[in-house]
Image (cartoon, rainbow, N blue to C red; front, side):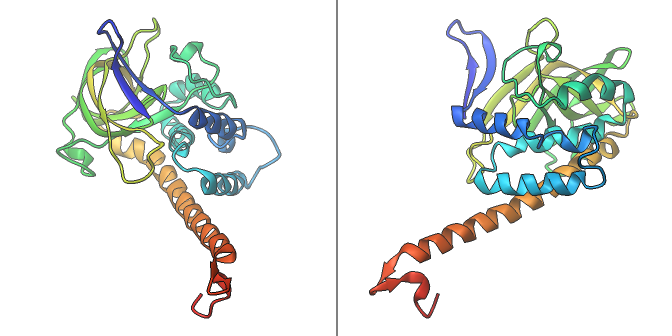
Length: 272
């Protein structure tokens, strides 16, 4: 992925461009419900939705794991949004569609949405209670966020669950990336992380400049609210890690079966 902060006229656009193969994988995973199947109605998978999805996720992760980051966060985000029934009713129908829409439009104009998460800040790391991003109330349920996130993956998601300090304490907010009029919502991407692995998944450093968001859950209960999302993402990380190990083993076996060493296949050698 490549970050483009400005267009040729010098105006901020804050866009991340991905390889076409990334979008092809996203379309396939969304079409198969990896981002939504545990939340869908229907009788086919009642009582085993999580198990069936985990199997699909496992098989997909053997192929490519980077694009599964937004898939994971989108699926998990609805658990956090349930803390605010109004937001859940508004967002869930567009999140659970099996259509991948990569266009840069307001959420209400898109055929399908992906959601991300922003918690980590440079001074606190995993100690999110040390976060300094501030949220100032500007209306009923709406806040204006100013601050930063040191690590925010899938930066082209349509909205993010973000932790920020409200007057009542650390709270959770749903912050769209594009506003209803099509303008940007104060996201200033600074750079993409130069990572050792998982490189197809863009991970950004971002500053919020008066970004508008709605509170999710109770004031001051941000950690409690977002942990419902975090727990599900961690389960997916465990499934994906297992898939990566299996894929590595499969490649090693394939190589050993076809590599000729001292007149015979490597897999037939005593040490192997």
